[in-house]
Image 1 (cartoon, one colour):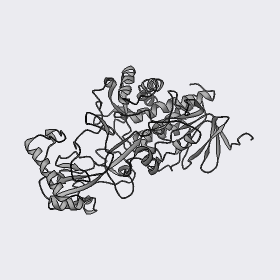
Image 2 (image 1 turned 180 degrees about the horizontal axis):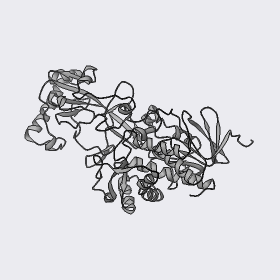
Image 3 (image 1 turned 180 degrees about the vertical axis):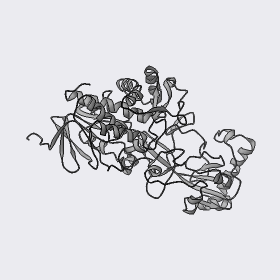
Image 4 (image 1 turned 90 degrees about the vertical axis):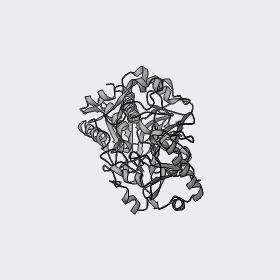
Length: 479
């Protein structure tokens, strides 16, 4: 066979323009490499989960302690020492790197001011979460990074999906686009294509979720995973993820269910019974239950509440409170302040009695009446012997009318993907580096189990820079 024919040539080719892809492009460019970014979405919807996330990164005040914190969070699913070392070193540089690019960086004063896993060894490294403009979400990080790419003269080709990795003699030497155009990458290709939360088959096969609307980008369909697998890449922690309580809206992305206004509610399963402490803190996909950390939620269930809860405030925060999520930001869906619009459109169903509500929830009326009565008794005595819900959150479901809302596991992101080392190099099933292929961001997240606030963006920025530098170095450039 002859040599592969290419239509054009760059030093580094990057697939994806979220935080990881932008960081890779800017770092490779700073080293002197000629860079192009391929993005499958159009300009109006590009940016992956970075665009619609909280867009903050944790402040790492002590890399040595951060390494221990990461190991603690990984628990029984360790990642390699070189990955831990690179992560702990590079995440400490995120804020200064962004400031050097001209970003106005400031700490979030409202969210993630303390670690969620404050009892774990190493958590003292966590000093809050930095954001662009000291404000969460609202496209701020994505808009800044896109502006930085433009200012640097780095070309971003929207509506240009990478379809295949081109290999020669076992090394990745370029990319073929969905349009059939082949682009050589002298130094390497960086996969920054995002996760697979919007790929129904992958979500079912790897995450075992069958009814999970997405919180983030519908473009997160596992493209980079499949490209890497086709050339022999190994995979890591493909079953790890974040879900949170959510509400399915039509057939598209869902809304976050945040029960912040009052406590007159309980969760019931398909059998009409409570099954969990409803107020257990969701630490980015995990709750403490049965003496250990568990992924939660993993399936659909019902929210039961009364009139006091209904009038206390919206069941999903608006853009002024938490500007996060595709449905809220991109589709501009808003939840009504008193939940009345959701009742009118049938998302929330109403009944005058608990027995009538049971019919709407398709559960046994006698069972549900007993469940609510038992819960209300716990509220009266101030002690939940069934699930240990805090006395401060025990508020009865007693004032009619009563309401039921179907709750779904809202899938924020997937974590697993092509296995990579501390230099962001993708490796094959034998642990051998696939020359010329790098990965960063959600396509290959560092986190094998638990993670804290601001960890996903921190990881994307850190390994994006590493990937860009390494690909540029392989192409003969150094910063």
